[in-house]
Length: 139
Image 1 (cartoon, rainbow, N blue to C red):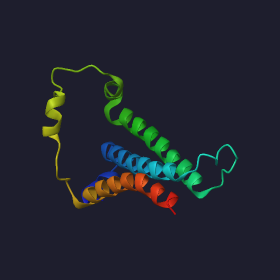
Image 2: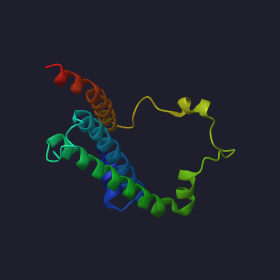
Image 3: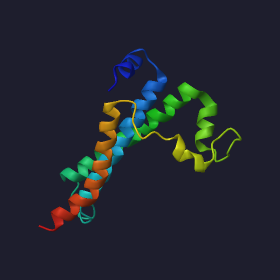
């Protein structure tokens, strides 16, 4: 993590904590995808709830839900009611960018190497979620 971000977290910066919750949620969703792909459909009906992949999947979803709750609470703290309303509003304001301009607003280069590494880990996790089950079942 970037030194500036760590300093902001220790100072109680709500926006920094919200970014951390968002990042944790992305990593947890990636792990939930991987663990969900590794589970077998017959485990749940037969009551085999103590399998490692099943427990990992439940743990990942628990982290996702806690991160989402943190995101909403910190959003209420950082932006108040207007931010929470904007999260569920589909209205497009005149000052909002058009969808066509969205690609131009994106960055191809993250602000630091840690974020680049995190993006690579998440993308690799998504690839692994689809490749690993095929490798294991091919044995």
